[in-house]
Image (cartoon, one colour):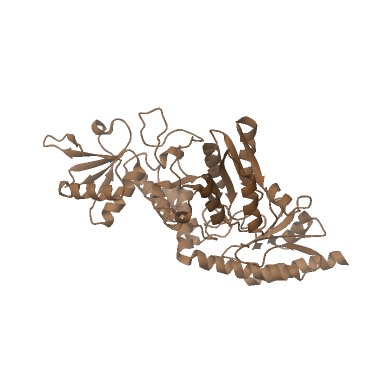
Length: 84
Length: 382
């Protein structure tokens, strides 16, 4: 189950991050995020399982991909930003 | 038909290019405009092409690859952005009108001025010296093509880059005739900020495709602004690449074709393509020298000569080209949109006939061309 979102302003940046994580064994799905977290900005998000999240964040930062925000799904179905 | 006008566009493409164009036009929607399958498919194609191009030119980040409609479009973005704050630019004496006209227009309308680094054909030391002489304390950019579209002259681009780096000047490269044929390694360039190229020549993509590779990090002014599918709530154009320079719907079928063209070049090997074209070029040059009353503008040094060769006869260039066309041979005659190059080579008043090869040309075709040209010259003599 994918229960976290890594949000990017640009689709190209989301694609680059997704390809890099896939190459290193972490599956993600590129999707449109809910409006509540997207700030009306038409970004794209990577859906990712929570137990891969910390590893994924570290891996992305290692290759200087850092222009993203992270949201975790709460028990009531809404998303909460995780401050990095 | 024998097609020898590959410097204008490669007419014969790998079959996969045509198939990609058709399939994509039927199945791919607008990239970055939705999360539904046809939009995501388009996004995948576009990103794959960015990745392939970034790898080919040795650029780390695929987002530095900007899609344009052709090399002229890319050069206009680069030149008008980089020179927007004014100052002085130096262009080589072998520039195409895709550089000469934008910089001239800017000099008429803005607070910029420019100089031309003239030098004789196939004299790389002389052109470096000319750049050194033209650069002054206000020079901000050098704009230079990698290969002359008229004479196939390979300019010493790494040395020019080195010179720019030593003077703290930016470099914009027009790779219209070199991309896919003459190796250009962005990772080795120090001063270069933009590399501009078409997709439809040596990269075997369809017409209507081009690329600008942003090797620098400056946030230059944009040529156009508009919808990017990102930061839609903001009135200001996004600052990040590629969105900063890519407004409006991309030519996704064209980019799909370009991706297949790039894959063809990678699979075949740019070195192999260059080698095959080099064999044809050598055959052509030797054959031309043996035909009476033909003046050839070529270098026997393969480091200086690409697969674009110009010549002229006693007859007008257009007459020669018309005769060749009547015999089923396609070449280009005239100034080839490059008056500066002709002034440097003293061919401005006559123009030249230009022959340019691709990977798909053959020795047999060159033989036939030489035979027909020889026939024409003999008839004229009598």
